[in-house]
Amino acid sequence: MTRSETAQQYFKSGFNCSQSVLGVFAHDLGISKDSCLKIACGFGGGIARQQHICGAVTGAVMALGLKFGKGSNDDDAKKLFTYEKTQVLLEEFRQKHKSVNCRELLQGLDMIKDSEKIKELGLFQSLCPGYVKDAVEITEKLLKD
Image 1 (cartoon, rainbow, N blue to C red):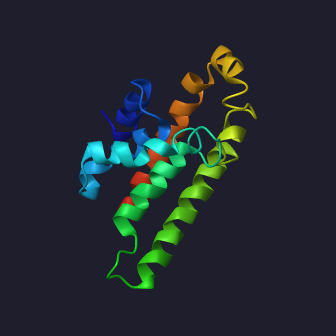
Image 2 (image 1 turned 135 degrees about the vertical axis):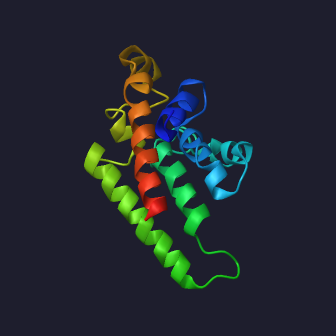
């Protein structure tokens, strides 16, 4: 099973989009899967269902930060490099989906006010697994570069 397929399985089994993306990179990043799931938990649904930046994207950003980010004894070059990688992630995701904003990705529907409509349309099942897949695949590429 590919990493993106595993992430989609996490999502289908009840983890949010952010958890599903960050969780599949745990081993490569030297952090436990459980820690990844906990760290990413609040970022699902565009941060606590507020529908800001897509949770799949924030999970990917966290993976990039864990791999390349500036720590307490690092110079600013690591921060700038992480920003560059993150900008590429955002641009590639935006090219595929026209947005990185959760509400826009869910056809402009409000996750709380329009929850019945979202369920009726099956958007969490039809759209979100693709966002998870693409976020993982873009991140895989960026982690290798």
